Image 1 (tube, rainbow, N blue to C red):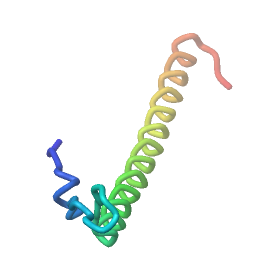
Image 2 (cartoon, rainbow, N blue to C red):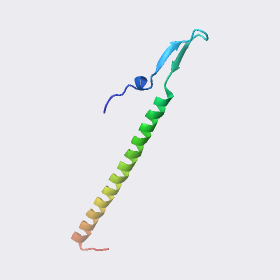
Image 3 (cartoon, rainbow, N blue to C red):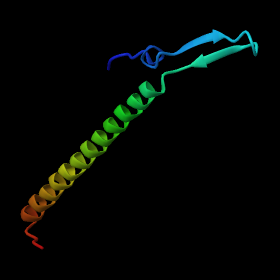
Image 4 (cartoon, rainbow, N blue to C red):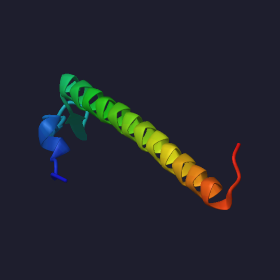
Length: 76
């Protein structure tokens, strides 16, 4: 997995606010929306992959059960 620098991607920076005193933090919200959109897409793909793997495993187990039934001489 590639390491990502989210502070850099978000154009994160801080500056000292002379008027109010204290430090202000800023990010680019369009970049934030882009990162969130990318993550949502990846989550959707992972959910799809999990569902595919789940059904593959179910078919595999059904096949194993059918083979065992044939070996035992029982049929549904």
